[in-house]
Length: 118
Image (cartoon, rainbow, N blue to C red; front, side, top):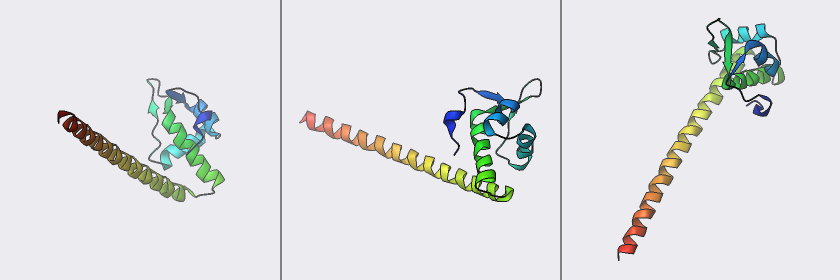
């Protein structure tokens, strides 16, 4: 995805900050909110948009796909959906591997305890 080292370590970004980081005008971010379901900034009590860090990373990826890779809006939506599916699959596989590792460690511990008893 986007280069995360250029995004400051903050919890929330106002639309002006987010637009500077992403490299587009604020109205572009507002338009992308309507086009991409994944972009849902929170609103403060004064109705200002507050983007989380992960939102800014996603916006950087949208910009990269649209401006650098020359995807259309529809193509970008499909690509993001595919990336999200791949990410979910990878995290699911990591979870299975972690569970398998824990079970193997438990079996190893039982074998070690059994051999010590003899």
